[in-house]
Image 1 (cartoon, one colour):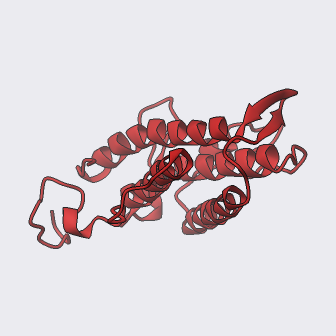
Image 2 (spheres, one colour):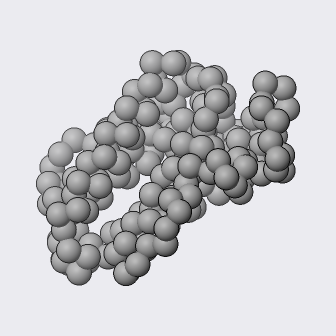
Length: 185
């Protein structure tokens, strides 16, 4: 690929020695393992979007789908906000980012190839991820909160977040491959 540094493992996304997701230590305990997976997937999202310009980030999969990498970043910022602020902190009335009553798919429909829109999405995502980490630090894995009138354990929320990222990173693999041929690892 032009513009890419030569790698010892050109068939992989990054060389194993340079993989920013490798912490060098194994998590111990249920909460630590789940959080380790969640952080791995968060880092993978950034990796899948690295080196792309605004037009590439906003490039849609196939009509009529509005799915794009930028839409995924916006969607995951909204999901982080919803679960960690609205549910775990029990603040259901907070306004949601990239969402409105008139445009519930604003996260994807508003993902246009404008550098300011990309910057806004990454800023929101980084802010929500940082906040989520703070929330999780101060909460017990077995604690229960209310969600739509039903009790839900923190454990369930965190496992759901792992599932949410894992599913969307499958989409990100395909979207990135369509943009420049790079495949996941």
